[in-house]
Length: 314
Ligand code: 8YV
Image 1 (cartoon, rainbow, N blue to C red):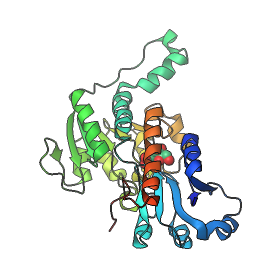
Image 2: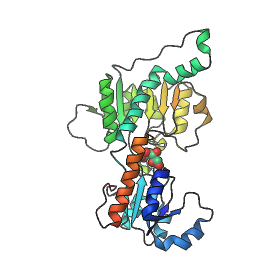
Image 3: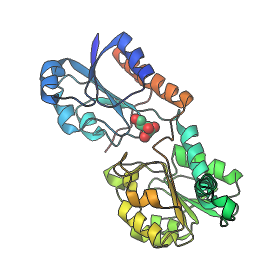
Image 4: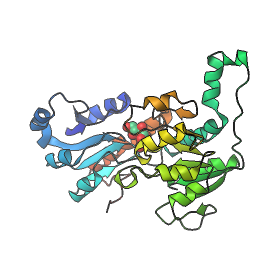
């Protein structure tokens, strides 16, 4: 059987299925990583990665017989794809199958933050309703939604948001062709023209801290920030300062810079919706992602082309 190195936690149903066809070596929290790699390194032909944990250049280069890295995620910023591809190692991910669920969570956030849904629930549960009414929220209909990154997920949110009467605009580094949505040349321009800013671009070095203090200032005191992409895209201290000082009205986030650590300041804020990276966490989507990971590995080791390779990184 082919040997695989598992570097990220995966659902048990995927691990069980893989174990029938492959020999898995647990490298999630190895007590002695060097010893494990000395023992099994030369036999490893595949790596199982995840969206938040993937192999770096050191690990990739240490495995001389590595052929494929299969990530249980659409985002591949945790894997050093450039190093892998330069060595001819195939990297696969799980696009499409999670788009709907991620877009549903983002749309939920777009409604939750301005309507103060999280805060309302805490208000009721803590018994405050007995003393008086909740403060008013803000109507979503008719507001301007700016989307940073109009890829598969950004586009799926745009379609949902249209139904709720939002006006859509976007900023993307790639030309998007003829669309009904207005394109802004810079993120700053987009933020200035938005009541809500949705972060839907890729993570990684190229987008680190893209949403900085200036962008938040442009979004303004009535603006909301929504993030179900990667925590690294937002300058987290700048966001905390903007939320604390009334620089923006509120935020909703499923991802954080050093997750699962979430800053205490954010936890204490009423005007913030926080979820623990659950955008793709449904039975249906996680099964579909697992199938895709399995099918990519099976195809490769059966000598067929993989189904969903990560495009070549320049
Ligand atoms: C997962 C993700 O939570 O697909 C992604 O990029 O971040 C999420 O779907 C993660 O990959 C689980 O490992």
